[in-house]
Length: 272
Ligand SMILES: NC(=O)c1ccc[n+]([C@@H]2O[C@H](COP(=O)([O-])OP(=O)(O)OC[C@H]3O[C@@H](n4cnc5c(N)ncnc54)[C@H](O)[C@@H]3O)[C@@H](O)[C@H]2O)c1
Image 1 (tube, rainbow, N blue to C red):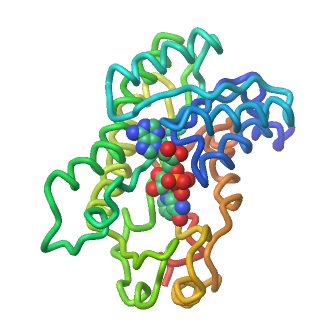
Image 2: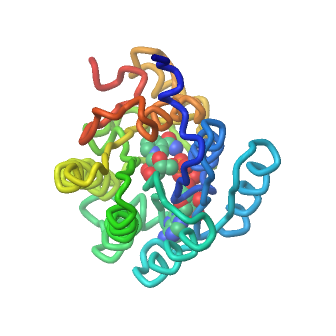
């Protein structure tokens, strides 16, 4: 009996949505490193294609950048069809994309002034998209009859409220930031959708789990990094690559008896 081989996903095909993002590119490379072929799905197909090309250069797997606007069901249907045509099967789905907004003033507006249109736009990108992709990929996984693993990315603010004191003097790319309520509400929905699908698809051998990142260092100013780090038992923000181990675990047979769970990768924030 070997144990470490259970972490291998060699020969499997994975879809990563938001694969061109800060965390997404690490997720795609991590799955490729563990042996899976990867469909790098993003609305930014140029960046997705660059990441796919770097994967085929560095790992002995197939990879392709595939366009999708995850808020459109037609676009999701076409994306799933092209993954099946290109790769043959879908064994792993990482529902990972999330969006801010083209209008950052509206996105970061105070709750009392928050526009319903803005709320709906973010809900559509962060939660409706996960429903649509899970719906169309889950159907294929059921037809294939070999089970599957679905992992959905939530956020620490989907399981706990933000400590708004950490945003004093905190800037991200020169903009005063906060965590809008829609972000928390949509991510809380992701955790709930995971639990629902875990029991719904258990009889088909499809496991569904959540990974919940805490704050990842990616261009925040020193004040924010310090304020955030002071709230964290491990004393710092996360590095993007620290999110990948949990994904490989959940994607692989190493977690064959794990479904409906949420792995919090938060430096201990939720343990205080
Ligand atoms: N970075 C963090 O600190 C952090 C913390 C907690 C949770 N998360 C979560 O991790 C996940 C990845 O975060 P990230 O930091 O890589 O985000 P990111 O903004 O860098 O990447 C998101 C990707 O999704 C794509 N996308 C957005 N809308 C889309 C649409 N309609 N159709 C297709 N693609 C679309 C974007 O083009 C982008 O490449 C997200 O779910 C995010 O909420 C991130």
